[in-house]
Each structure stands twice: as C-alpha cells, then as structure tokens.
Length: 255
Image 1 (cartoon, rainbow, N blue to C red):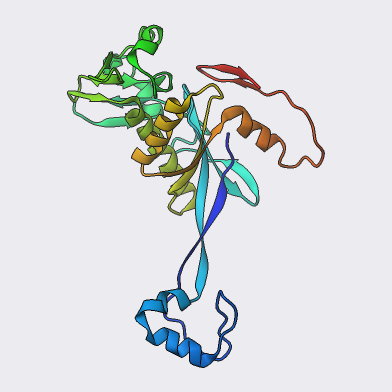
Image 2 (image 1 turned 30 degrees about the vertical axis):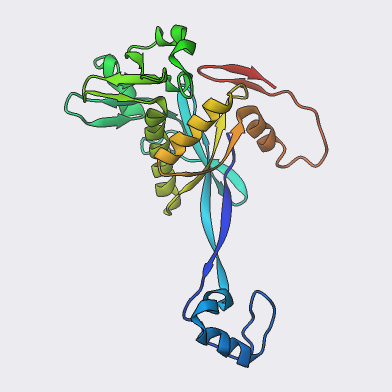
C-alpha cells in the first residue's frame, strides 16, 4: 500500500491590508513600492503575499481482487474503512438490468445472478491488447472483445455499452476516493496509485488514465513492492536489505 501525504500549494491571498511591516515573498520592500505595486494591475498579482493550503493526497492499492486506500493521520498511514465498514473494497463493478451501477461489496454479492454484467479481475486487462489476454478472457464471466485498434473492451449487455478496462477501474477508484473524502471530511483530488512491478508502460499509463477518469490528479504510479519497502522503512534508522513478497489475488511478486 502506498502511503499518503499532504500536498502543499500556494494560492493568492486577497484582501490584505497594507502597512509598513507587511512581509513579501521576495523580502521586505518599501511601503511606497508596495503601494505602487498594488496600483499597477499588471504586477498586482505578483506582489500579493501567499498563504499555504494543504491538499489531501491518498495512497491507493488498486488490486485485482480487492482495493484499499490509505491517508496520513498523525504522521502515520491509516487504512480507510469503506461505507460498509471494511478496510478493503472488492474490485468489482456491476450494472443491473435497470441500468443501476454497483461498486464494491454490493456488486460482488449479486455476481452469481448477474454474471455477464459483473466486471471483476479487470486489472488483468488494463493497458493490454486483445492478442495478449486470450487465457485471461476465458477466466471471466463477461464477454471480452476488441475494438478496431485491437484494444480490449468489456461488453455490458444490461446497458448496451462496451467499456475500456480503465473505465471500470475508474469506478472502483471513485468509490475509494469518496470513502476517503467522507473519512477525512474533506475533498480528495490527488492520489498515488500502486501497480505490480512487472507492469509495462502501457499498463501504467492506462492505470493513470483510470485515475483521471475518476477525477483524480495522479501524482505518481509506484511499484507495489516499492511501496511496501517504503512503508517498512518509515521508522528504520539503519540500512537493511529486505525481501518483499507481494501475494495478491492476481499475482505473486518477489522483489
């Protein structure tokens, strides 16, 4: 799991009262210069002082079977419990015959009675061509097809639509972020997402695209074992060589 952090940005601060003690980013300047600066529209924006605003950044483990999201609390990463009170969310999206979209545990529960419209293990298809997923396509209950460019598409008969894998993954990401926003009582718009170490550029780009579709600014894509190593080393003061076993629902990596 990638840990989260607080991302700092500077925004203009308006309504500031001028006085002889006003500090500016470029150092102290004379009151006359400041007054002239504020009277000139072209440079007014540059002369205004700024204040720092904290933006929440979450760490997301977008898994084959389950996904999780973490935030920083008191300097330590905390796994967010979802709306169902669980620390992990099934990476499952479904559409009912009435067109309703279900994500997570509720989607998983109805998969037996609605197999052709329930999408799971989508991570196996993200960023890949149809020619690469022949075996994987035989292991799912929904129809896997290709578009005119050979890209993987997932057919949803319930709503008569075909989805790209990243569009389905985006729905899982959106739920995770919504749960994190409720947990923090604050809007979350930035994230770091982990991927398997073997993911190629196409798969990493598609994962980042899934984040953008979900309305996220994806700051970084990090290898899952790298994230585990970083988390392990938070409180370590000496150098060590460690072996990371990443046993997931779809892959087993050793780094």
